[in-house]
Length: 123
Image 1 (cartoon, rainbow, N blue to C red):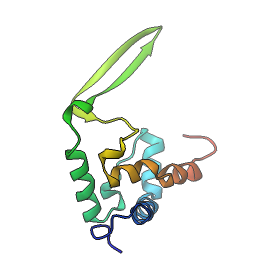
Image 2: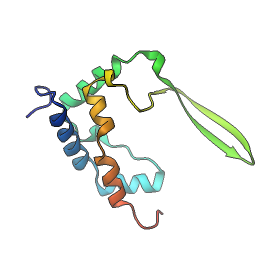
Image 3: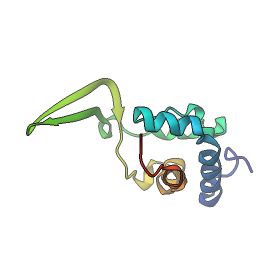
């Protein structure tokens, strides 16, 4: 069943789980542990899923997004680095944000996969 034709919560959830399962490889895990982040191209999603997620994100009002930033603390002093042109929407998403975003929020596959592959000691 293709997600562009079926929007049942169970079907969307199972497709997201399959996408994550196929997206995480040794290469991404190595990058995550060495650099602290990993770029997963296309995340294993069917292109129609990506389009639906994009539509749902585009429908969220801009005032719910905030500037992405990193906070550094040294000797009790906090400094914030605000990243220009990078906006973020923190979970939890609202039910009205859309079927696909809600399914992404409920899905535990990515977290489970990362925990399973977590080495006993990170490099």
